[in-house]
Each structure stands twice: as C-alpha cells, then as structure tokens.
Length: 141
Image (cartoon, rainbow, N blue to C red):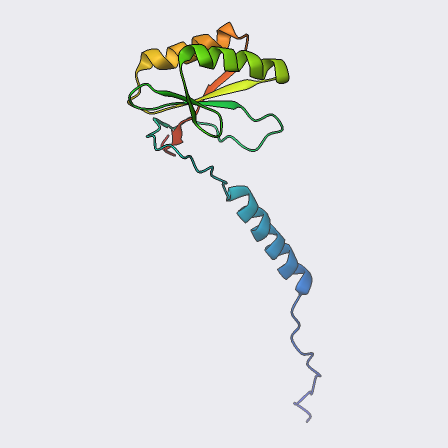
C-alpha cells in the first residue's frame, strides 16, 4: 500500500498588482481628504456653518474683504485698512482689470451686521455679480 503521495508545493507568492492597487487607492484618499489652509494675518473668529462649501484654488481668486470685530475693513492679501469709499473705488478698479471678479467677505462672528451689509452693497454698486462669505465648517448636520 502506498499512502504517501509527495506533491510538489509551490512557494507562496506575493501578488504585487493587488498591493499597488491598494496603495494607489490610499494615495487618492489622502489627496482628496487633504485640505490646504490659507494663513490669515488677521485673527478673526469666523461664524460656524454646517452647510459651508470648501473653497479651493481657482483660476479667478476672489477679492477678500475682511471685517474685524470692531467693524474695521481690510481688503486684499495684504489686509490693507480701507474706508468704505476706498473699498468701493478699489472694487471698481479691480472689476475693470478682471470682469469675472468675485468678492469674498471674511467677517468676524461678532462684527457689526451693518458693516457686512455695507460691503455687500458696495459690491452690488460696483456691479460685482458673485459675493460669498467665508465661514468655519463644523461638520455637524
């Protein structure tokens, strides 16, 4: 009687293609979930919103108007302090250079509501079609 059958065993192999697929999915996941934050030179406490949309890098960056908690207006990347009249003229000048100009209002949550409305009115006065507001995302439904 012959009970022992010697079969040749193949050595275990690592399937590289499956590992590469998993790594590519991980890299894509990390790229999609990574956010790039802009460091503001002015400390403001943004109001929270659960429906806020993330703003990404675009070909047409908006003109950022910052309103601090005391109602002071600052505009642009350098946070230049301006009055409402200076803001209106700057918006008109920027609109002449860029007809697709958008304005983003970055207001402190304790900023006077009247100043926010004045900035929005100044944008309408300059015939700027897109006005948006920056908020801090909470992630709460």
